[in-house]
Amino acid sequence: MPVGKTVKQKSKKVSEANSISSSLNISESVRKGWEIMAVLVISFPPSKNFEAYLSNVIDAGTRQKELQVDIIARHCAGKLTRISKSGPRGKTPTTVEIERAMVLAYMVTVKLNLAIRRLHFTRLFLVNLFRKLCVFNELNSLN
Image (cartoon, rainbow, N blue to C red; front, side, top):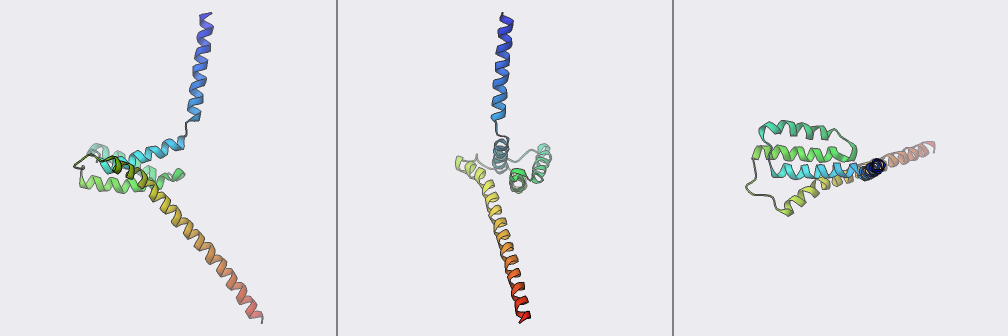
């Protein structure tokens, strides 16, 4: 009897674990991971042994187009280069600085998206204007 009960308990635990893991949002985890990376690269320079590895990880992120990781990774790459040259900060970052670093990476993303949308809108506007001018020129040439 205890054996059957143990199997039921284990299967219940497995099903609970599966439901928890299926409810995890992977994109949310990736976003939070890159937010942490943005905070770390403004706060602490990597050791010389770790710098090449970290640079490769960030470089790989610049090629990852989904979830706009490439934009945030480029931001992190610039910050990594800067802190690697300047060295460690003299003090621990404040809570405000940490929050700002987390938001700043996504502000860059939002600004870039707005710029891309503006360019797309401008392109559509110019294409439509060109078409209207072509139609207008055709009508004038017929008269």
